[in-house]
Structure formats: structure tokens, C-alpha cells
Length: 259
Image 1: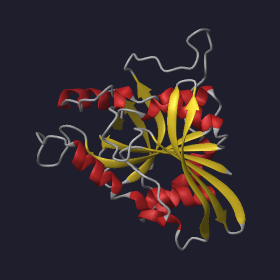
Image 2: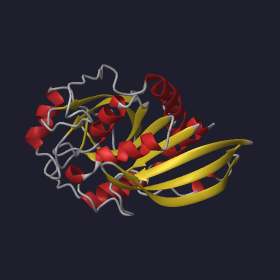
Image 3: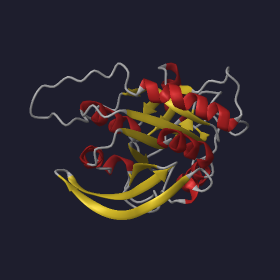
Image 4: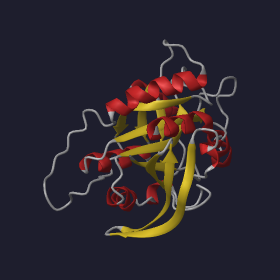
């Protein structure tokens, strides 16, 4: 198993503390910058001993910095990022995302999975600009991985079998947060959470036949949905802090995939 993990606001860095007490030891840990046809990509590469079996974990910070606040979402080099994962020969990409919640069942602090996405931004994201290649995205996320992680997330968060764990991600262009009117329209069109990055990765991974799944941390209510304060402003620093306080379920997913 070579597991690729992409983090952003929801997982700024990948340390080794999360492996403690789980029968996993770090045999080698290297940071490097790899070159791709689309630009350089910093990777954090770990060789792990998982109950006597060697595994590889490749971590990529999608903003290419240590804070998650540097490169704005509309400037992220998704082509380079996904190509770097392809070149690292990962078997699966697990993307960790911070999202604004629209569905009333996706309260801030809850960690769930993306089942579908909606992208009406009109921005083309493809490796095939010079030829006509049409890629099916009927199921944009790896269904086997999602089925496995649903049980992990339910168990880790103490949810019963009736708790919804799969949601539709609406891709917003950013870098501005959405207006209240936009969030209301997004909900009517089927969006249950909103973010600015992840579906672009999913599209490119699909073109390369790379299995891809997205763990989504509900870091805040979307604009106009804060209970008791529909006019509350959104703040990126607060959103990031909330997301990184909910890494327990994310680590549980990573450990389950490694084991």
C-alpha cells in the first residue's frame, strides 16, 4: 500500500504523533520537492512499519505551505499536485477538506465523506486540452473506500446507523466566501456542503485512474446558516482552527486504510 494524503485547511501538516499506540512505527521520514511537467511539488514521504508490514505514506499540502493560508484556492496548482501523486505511484488518494455546512445534519465538528460533487464554476480542469478525451465521472469517488470509511467515521464519532455520512460537495470559485443568497441557491440545486478546491483534484485523479476519496470536516455553517445569527461573518482563520481541532476521525480513516 502506498497511500497518498492531500491536506489543506483541514489538515495542514502530517506529523507522526497520530501513529503512536497503533502498532505503526516510522522507519524513514523525508521531505522533498519533486518536479512535474506542471511545476514543483513539496512532498512529505514516510516509510512505515504497520504490524510488521512495510507501507508508504505520501503527504501533500495542497497550498504548498505550512499554514494553509498562503496560496489562494483559485491559484492552487492542481495539475502539478495530482501528477506528483501519480509519479509517486500511490494506490489511493485520500483528500482531507474543510467545508462550510449547508445540510442541517452536517453540523460543525462532524466529519463525513463526499459522495458527489457539483461544479458550475465554468473553469475547465483537465489534462487533455490538446485532444478530445471524455472521462466518466458518474461515480467521482472510490466507492469501496467510501464504504469502508463510513463505518470508521460512524464508530469514531459515536454515530448510529441512521446518521447521514455522505454528502454532495458544491465547488465555489472563491476566494470570497459565498453570499446568503448563493448558499440558498446552492441548497436548492443539491449542494449540501461548499468548498473551493476538492472537485478539481477529483477530476484530475479520475482522468489518471487514480482512486480518490474525500474526507470532509464541517468547519463552519455556510453563510446565513449560523443558528441565531444569520448575519455572522465568516473568518478563514477561525474556519481553519475549527477544522484542525477535528483531526481524530481523519486519523482514524488514515489508520484504517494503512491497516
